[in-house]
Length: 376
Image (cartoon, rainbow, N blue to C red):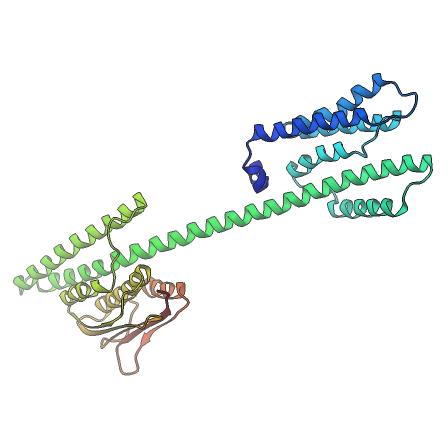
């Protein structure tokens, strides 16, 4: 895991040099503090100065070489305890151990929860027991120092796990955002292409069927194919341009474009009766409503033409209700069809927490119904 992912938000604002500078200042202050503490009588200052420096100054580079720094400070603090010099209860060693615990990979054989529990018990017990005799005091200092190391290790591991969990959550959210965006792009591409290609396929079939007997009708079908393919190509270029530049190159289609949609469907033999009663909708809601109607009408063109289709769109400021019905045979998935159109419509409605139904009508034909809330 990258070190930056394990750094706290506060220290992420500081550069690495600034953090090392803070450690260096702390190392100097801590070393001076060790030098002014009283030592046992008869202890030479020649031993006190280098050991104090060895126990404090390496803290300046604890972020650069955490393991060697911890080993050096631990050795110097232990020597100070043995020689009767001022003992810091491994406070500096614990401070050096923290980045080790924070950076080292997890080892299954290290019982971190047990270490933390024992350390807490020792520290609490020492506070309750209070001072004892000379030998008991020395043993207590050593035991307290080990508890400080255990507490530092446990704290570092806990912080590491929490930051690692936060980093994993952030990655999951990023992956989900990418997945949602891919789904949105796939949905838009499907909606842009499916309608035009369905119309082209229908008209191409008509042209092939009547080419020999009615060449004028075949020529009309070819003109529709040309017009539709040019419009589809322009819309595809618009969509790809938006994806490449991450900018809106023009208004997204909305309910006002349903008239043009009905005119294109009429070219394929589907007469669309429009009834739109909706105030100004938010752009995203209007786009979703348009795409749902577009896909429903496309299905009529693909599977029921020639037919009559009735489109009703109602909005009352809180909910949008869409109904698309036709008098075709009531079948919507041809052999080999994947049914992605119905799935796309359902996904659009589910984004808003609405209801979607689609299926054959008892009286004949097919019906698509969508009802979802929105905020103005």
